[in-house]
Image: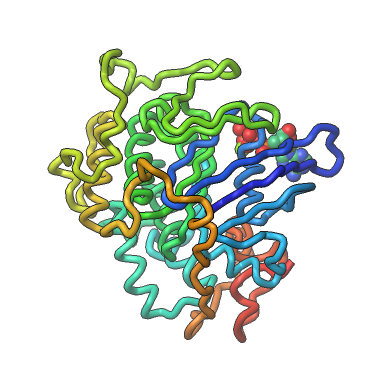
Length: 359
Ligand SMILES: Nc1ncnc2c1ncn2[C@@H]1O[C@H](COP(=O)(O)OP(=O)(O)OP(=O)(O)O)[C@@H](O)[C@H]1O
Ligand SMILES: [Mg+2]
């Protein structure tokens, strides 16, 4: 699904490469943590996958396509297969929750009818059905991040890239966000998340790729955060978990016992402190209710690589009955940050140009 072959990235004006001959492959349906110290190259990896940056050398394949073969004009179509979530949410402050989520569909020209169906469904999935008309400042940080996640997944991307999505949240809220990401992953979306947060990585027991100075020093299928380069910090909410608690591998199985209050997608987020393990188990069960998984949680036996790469990306559809994009500069900037429009580009109300960058 994503393959880096000998990828190096050196930014102009810098002496050492941000990434140095990286080889890595991520399969369809995986949940992968990218960990490493500040400056180790995590965000650079995500930007390369999005084709926001170009490698200095090496090749990248995403969804069966060599990124070098995607013309600048086609980049926005390619990016429709991906959702992006950031540490600082990046919501539009003057738009409601509904409109923030609708925004990413409007900017790619989806019809009003599609938006009216897709947005409520997605808000229900992230547990915000009741808050569709709120403004971002009326929400908690965790709720704001749920809106950002809803915006990232409303177009059903195959890949979700999350750059420190829990960086501004407390441990309990982070656990809730992780359970949501786990449920999205259980629905078949490949998730790649850059993070510094040791407690999360340790509890999720997913694949961990560790970068040090732009090189991969560890790639573990069910790793934790422990590393020589960064001290491990256990968040308060998980610090009292018994040391002998078994690794929570079972959370990834839809058969895991669900928490009753979370078996419906619109169930409220639990107010009380909940361990990441419990939250993730419940969310996976919830995902099984909302979205029958076309691809289950990460397979024990990963698919054969050639088979995965041979799977063609679905056709990139042209916009139907486009909703006129708003040309508010603030929104244009957000569209740029979400990879939906080229920096400085004005929307073209007449058709294809209004969907994204042509740089
Ligand atoms: N646009 C840029 N121009 C020049 N150097 C850059 C640019 N972006 C990143 N770098 C450099 O590349 C290296 C990797 O940066 P990157 O942002 O990928 O690290 P990171 O692991 O995401 O760090 P953090 O945890 O602080 O977000 C750093 O040395 C950084 O200074
Ligand atoms: Mg970063």
